[in-house]
Image 1 (cartoon, rainbow, N blue to C red):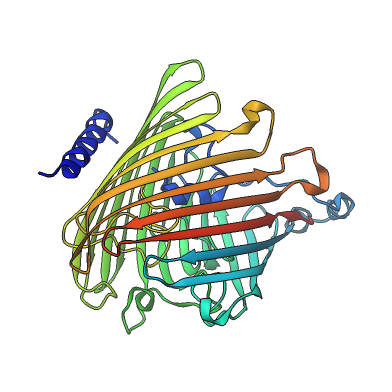
Image 2: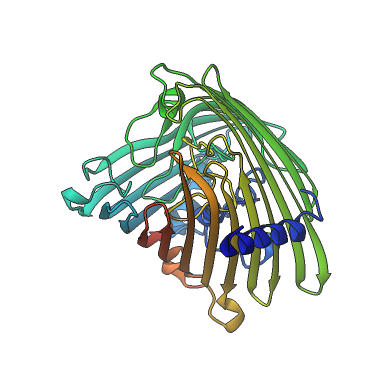
Length: 448
């Protein structure tokens, strides 16, 4: 064993021993899709816990809402929100490909109130248009292929509710481990589906059938089978459940299948231990299993991934230490959204065949120093023994994200969110470095 192999093995064993003393997370990137880095370990959301409910903001035109209060709840509780966004991305890949674009757009979101506490409708239209988009630097996924702009009605659904259980039909968001928004470009993934969900309470579940997906930079919906690489239309059937008896424990599992093409299962759990005032230790674990047919874009495969992570916080800082290992047959396949792995970073997900990866992460909420709304997170992954197209590849990536989200009390400017991101990737298989720079400005403007 070489010196480098020895210290990597010791790191892996040390991470495993430190985390596996407690049995059963959100991914590094998945955590950042919904908002800035959590300010404490307790705030970390896992894929099956679902996103935090978005608090309804005070409208910019309160007198209009006041007039609507004279109407039935279906109209009186109407929510209308503009969500503009501009995004600059420059990615210099380890394959000597350069992608660059600056786009502007966003969405307009509408949701009705509940008719007789039973029926509601929801819609959201998206657009992304080029500001700067060199023809020879395609591939940022901010725009359609060819650096073209696009517009699409991504959400359009009707909902029926009874005792906390909601039946939703047609275009909607999904928040499953491998079938989700992946909202890290101009517009998110959305899905055409029929779902039945209970998203509140100690026991939560979601089940349904998904027949098509609008990918992040697309203006059309295509079948789930086609997205996975098949030539025939195929849909995805799924079921997921989670149990959270208190704030300190959560466990959940999900299963999905595209018949004759792809099947997978996922399980997760976390436990939080109070150490002393304002300091806690949280242990997370996750496991994925996948089985794919030869007609997928990855070919025939069977693989798995195990991840464990410990998190703690102290005076505004959150520290994470994680370890991941993937089966030696193939890498994890995620054509329908973000990978839930703890070692999913900006440029690469470290779940290739036989890959082992160590995560070290620290974030800080500057409100502890009197600067509300400012936070930063640094993620580092060291990976070894990964195999891509039969070639062994050791790699490492360092990501920095700085967020400033204007806090409540600033009137018109509330909801303005500036995000600065940079990443550096080194791969021994290519013997090259890759960089990724992003500047994102978002603004939620509640009309009603």
